[in-house]
Image (cartoon, rainbow, N blue to C red):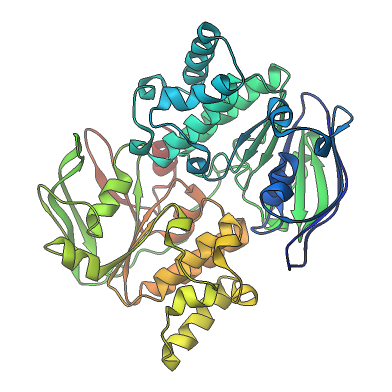
Length: 475
């Protein structure tokens, strides 16, 4: 079905990022591309779907064949009929304001008859359990819901190849398992599926091959029947199983107790999500904010840092929006929205030249494996590298509160550990809140967890409650 022959690629003015890639994918096969952040997975997916080098310019050598035909001989419309795409940042592929219209758009572009198109849109929404969102405005959705909409849009046009780049990045555990079931159904329908992914737990039972990439090359290929004896950590990969993990962050609260929130209402402009929330906290701890997609985690975070108004109740970060903004720093889920400078180093320094700031910036860049690329343009780095830049920028801030929204969704195992270590050190001066669906990261990093629920929310220690947290995340 798909054949990659001697693929080499470099972006303009840079060294090779892909070297001697040779891979054949049979019809109906599900292949997972994995590896450390920046290893070339996303670049390879962009070459397969034709975006590189036509849009992301650079020098490409080698040949890509679909059913024996070179893709560089295909018009964009023809290639689009063969391959359906889900990008790492779903917002980058949205063009409509209403969910149903967005999902239907690809079918309209390919001239699918209206009655058939409506049926396909309905069926795609049923598969992804988003029928209730069909009339919603896309910009009001949570990141996880947006990811589901992007996946649904690929099902409308009956492309034989589906290409997904980090499809679980913004999904909770339950939704990730549901995605695994959807991919299983698509595979049974005969679809050829290629997935670039760090998180492997929801794919282990359905993949045919695991292609491990390192430094732009394929370093090893693991077949499904070899997974039993495969140690992911040997290649700095995420685990295949979560059930045996234990919490590692020791909970030793300082004496200073604060009220995280008092009688707080978490609400969108048109809807109250949670009402009368009261939670205590201790200075210098790391607290995970957990809950299903759409429950109000990001809204809560934006209230803490002063970006959203508080109509009822109080929070620990300040009495008014101005105070909350001054006392906190917020790392958004979309790293691109917080990158402004020409180099990674300047993102941290923002023009400052004090020796202590220069020293701290260097230390953070080294700890997060960003030092060698400090003079590079941050907007052109991989998703995981952008996330680490944003974490580094947060940790150089001298504020009492940090709020991070899904800081590890694009990180491999080794880089996740480095982020956990940096944040643990930062608790000497700041209290940290982390929105996350990343169970392994929560156990490595967080002292306590807020379980946000419609009926009853609670704050529990992470240690000794591992199974409770796992059950909550997959419920």
